[in-house]
Image (cartoon, rainbow, N blue to C red):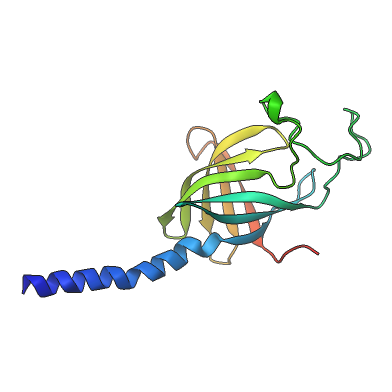
Amino acid sequence: MRLSLAILAAAALVAAAPARAAEEDAILGLWATEPDEHGFARVEIARAGEAFEGRIVWLSEPNVPADDPEGRAGQPKTDHRNPDPALRERPVLGLRIAEGFRYAGNGQWKQGQIYDPASGNRYHCNLKLLPDGRLRVRGYVGISLLGRSTTWTRTAPAD
């Protein structure tokens, strides 16, 4: 009797694994950020081993605006506010801005970090897939209560 219960329990776990994998992979794909003073971006979320990461793959404004006070007008945007001077010339396009997310169940990915190239700041971050299919991105310092949320929308590749 014990053996048959153990076999049934193992079979249930094996049957549940594909459903969990599908839930876990629900954030894979292309997401449009909310527009701000820097325009908006498309971020591709992909697996990175056991975790998830996101890279900027498209920018609505890929070049520095004409009124740039730092004299960089018309040049491709770079990570010029990065606290590490060695990284300030790397392009924003292709930049990994989200990393380390692990699926926590219930449509939530936690333990990640998000980088804001506009400020050069890195934050702890949690992701939550909303019932309408959008992705809530919550960046914070210390505890989640001390942070800011934005919402990304699933999108198709840019032309």
